[in-house]
Length: 157
Image 1: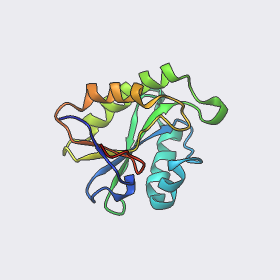
Image 2: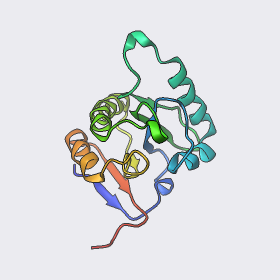
Image 3: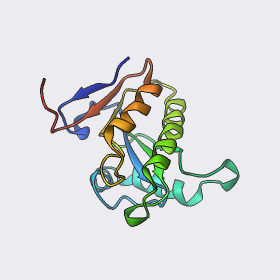
């Protein structure tokens, strides 16, 4: 199934969906869409922050993993850890792409009920990765799954 693009806010996704976004490994939702996630999903934020703090070292590095939170307000939140740091400590775009591959694999394995996944154009904001690069990776992993990319500024064709 191809990626579907919709002119809408990510937060207009139907209830029962997974809302996916790129996160840092520090447990901080301080800028961009993450601030809105923190307001709307305070329990998911606590789960993500705990995940970042207590991710077992023997499992491996936290970057390239996904924290899929329990349902809150009708949604589950997928926190794809694509950068270790944030702000001036954001990983390099090539490293973020590698982490995105692993985080997507992790998310799809965690999504056992095949819930539809909605996202923004993750990585393309403060992580400074051109959307086309992330989109290439996303196309490799979505196969037969429903993945909707929400963009309120989408140009109608």
